[in-house]
Amino acid sequence: MIEHCAAVSDLAMELAERLNIPVDRDLLFMGAMLHDIGRGRTNSIKHAVAGAEAARRAGVPEEVGRIRGRQVGAGLTGEEARSLGLPPGEYMPQTPEEIIVSYADN
Image (cartoon, rainbow, N blue to C red; front, side, top):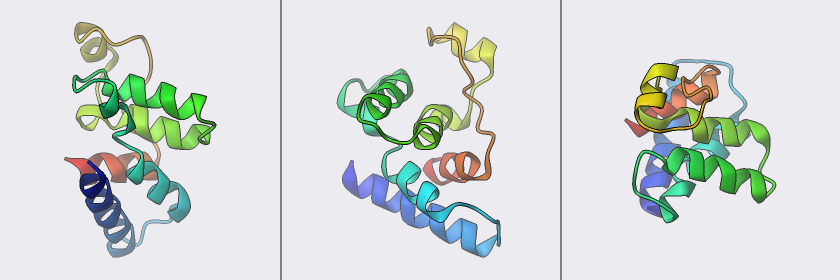
């Protein structure tokens, strides 16, 4: 999993540079490195929720937790999230950092 997260981080940083998109590079790096933190608890789609909660409990900045929670499946609508048994919430990437990590992971 560490190799996968490092590869996602490398690709995310490269995409931001190639596309010349203004991003918070530290946030992008942290979000990419921690995007699968919930995989230690479950391998299901609910790893996004587990990961966001683990990040919150560990004191990881909220922006990093949002990257974690919004990259599942490259983003889900509220209806899709409900049909998968996920709690109500926003699962569609919105910020440049969220979008880049989601793309780099898929």
